[in-house]
Image (cartoon, rainbow, N blue to C red; front, top):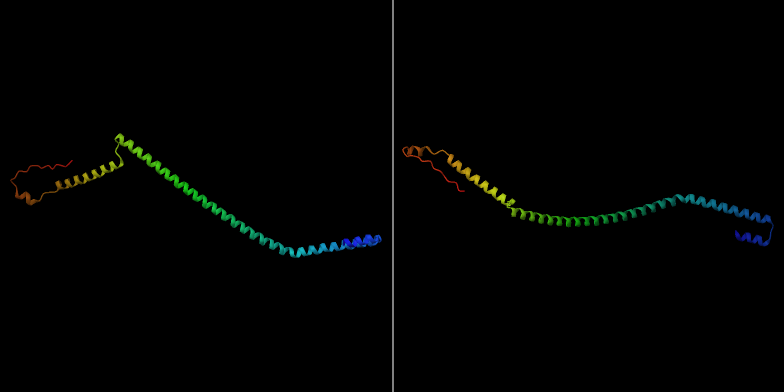
Length: 165
């Protein structure tokens, strides 16, 4: 198009030829634009759908990668939290044992019985109660009638059984 215009201006033709050539060029540019618009309209829907599919694919990949990174970070934080918790629990247990030992030593120095001492005393009291109950059952049991009939003249003296203390 430009070459045609240069040729016409080199020949120094009349202004009418130049005007006609410019008009033809403008007409061709207009038609080319309309053709491009029609082609874009025709294939635009297909291109748009293709772009949407590609965008969706990229979004899924990105989302998957982000979820993977979040999962890794969560696992690391959980692991660190468990480690810290285990260490803290161990330290608290040691501190608690030290405290209990010192309190027990202090109470022992003051003459306060320990839980073990009290448990041993309770067991001994239970054993003594059982022995007392057995002895009271034996002394409360009625004597057989044959014995009392066989020794009517004998004088009875009350007998006391001593309880071991």
